[in-house]
Image (cartoon, rainbow, N blue to C red):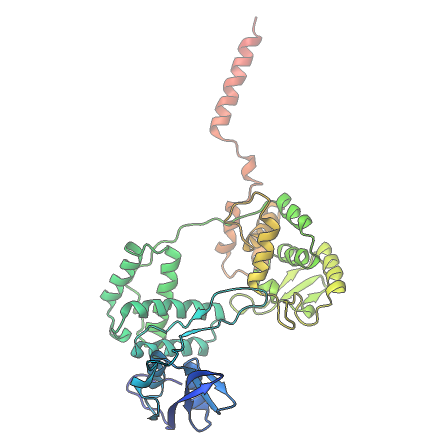
Length: 413
């Protein structure tokens, strides 16, 4: 619960910041009487709860201290940890680098908290944006993208209040992103979407972006794998679980997030359908279940006996991670001479293109893929080779006619 600037909460509480030693590491404890308001604010700072100390706690650092002071400034705040005491000489400082929550079966470097080097005033705005994204129910991937892009923007502002930025200054910043930083069109679009959300949805500045042009995105055709390469990759995959995963994704045209999110109960063998729950855009849809895919699924489930998630991770009962699924794809197709731009999503592109080449109506393909706009599906008409192969190059036609004339001339006595 973060209030707009100048507004007062209708509930006040006493909050005390104390230095605690938690698991042999210094932390800043946040103490207050149990309340939903306090819990929401504490969670908004990224604090975690300690049952031993009966408090929420943050890393023992100046940045965390300033963040807590900024978030709880509208309440009666008692400071037992002085600003000058944070990271005293001789005490081991606790970095703002926390261990990342890793997906099962994946490796990765520690995750730096996105607001670790943002000015205290702008950190509160970052938290307000995070709260608004959660209240509006945006997907986790969208929330992550918006928050990261907004954090990059706030870091570049340094101590300038983000609320004070004018439209002209924002235009100059976006020009700097394209000209000086040479960011791609896709990255600039993502950053503009994040900033548009903050200024219009958080601050309520309607039509703030109406006069700011967006860079034109390049038209990128889907990366398609031939039918022969699809089969070759599947046949070379010896692991039953891995082969079933790839076969299910291709045969139903699923996104990587959709296939790892499947549950055992989503497979309807009677109606030969796969239920896709809360796909992109939070839409449910039905996908086709192929006969050979069903046979492979029966063989796989008999061997692995999944309980809840169809493709379980290394630690039950968690599903297989997206990164693990992408690694499985790379391993299966890396030796087939495919370009490096081909990815797990190419299975979905290939599914749609092969359907189109086999004569399936474009409207049915749109429904199977779950596209809102038919223009998204029409991209596959640009990569379908069935009709293109019937078109003869003008050069070939000219040469063919020329060769025919030469042959006729040679035949004459």
